Length: 306
Image (tube, rainbow, N blue to C red; front, top):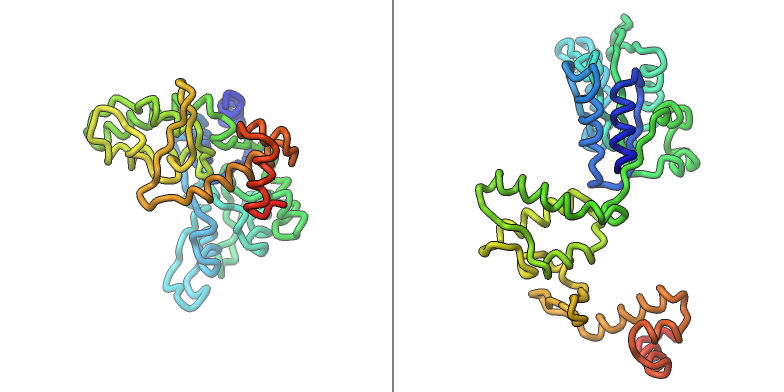
């Protein structure tokens, strides 16, 4: 993350016209895009965000390029596109990997030549815009499949920034929790002193598939449900408390979710995880589970693993 912050500063202070943000959903690509804009000499001009997957394919071209009156059936008058509105500022193209190939070609032309025409127009319009594209897709693989234009990919990737998932930066978790709880206190006008040690261990034991966005949502839920001074495990959602957590005393903390749980399913999953961690080595897996190899083989047969 220190490298990411340094790259943001370098790009913001440069004249780079294209930036590519890659990373899983919820890692903060939109915050990085806004930081690049805010720290640049374009900060006094518009920052316009476009979600390429949220706008229907039939409308996105008109939204970006604008149109002249009569360009299509419902074009009652001239409309400036988002490219014009973002002049001298930043155009943030979220979910860029979902843009259709025909529009990819037109966007590449704008980036290369810094001009375009409205739909139905005959006059070129010059633009000075920084393009920041973001995607949670593997664009390299998309290029290989032919789903994304190779020339546009390399044009965008002049300055790439990859946002790491939360599970790979768990040392940042205390800082993120403190910051987010501070934001929630301001929003809900409620004083919470933080998380109990037991609740915090569940956070550190979770893989966070939804990354920082999921962390924020879970803390908001717990914040609202909390009736004491600290957030407790019972304030956390079932997906967090479904996995046992080892306490400092050496015992396990496991909260049964309200809908109940299958003990047999838990046992089966622990055996599966142990075998996977040990590469299928039954002796090591048995040692990991604190049982003998014979007991492990008996339970593997029970669950049709062998």
